[in-house]
Image (tube, rainbow, N blue to C red; front, side, top):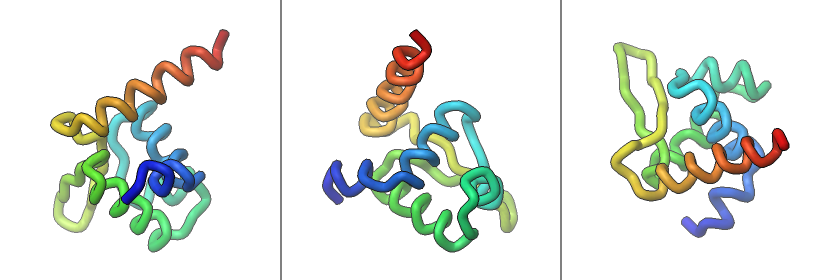
Length: 90
């Protein structure tokens, strides 16, 4: 997937901002905070996981997502969000 495709989605960007701010969330919590349904949220999370930006951990039926610390893409995305948020405060 091209960079533009990953970042052109407002819900995916909101997911990334939430993960940056909160660390780790489950699919239902993402959906609730974003005002999206479970299926749509799950698809966006799968795209981000497929790109190696997020990683999933499963506890029974609960899927938790966080940044994939082993991925260079994830590190750059996380840093971009942190720098952007900090600069926006000024």
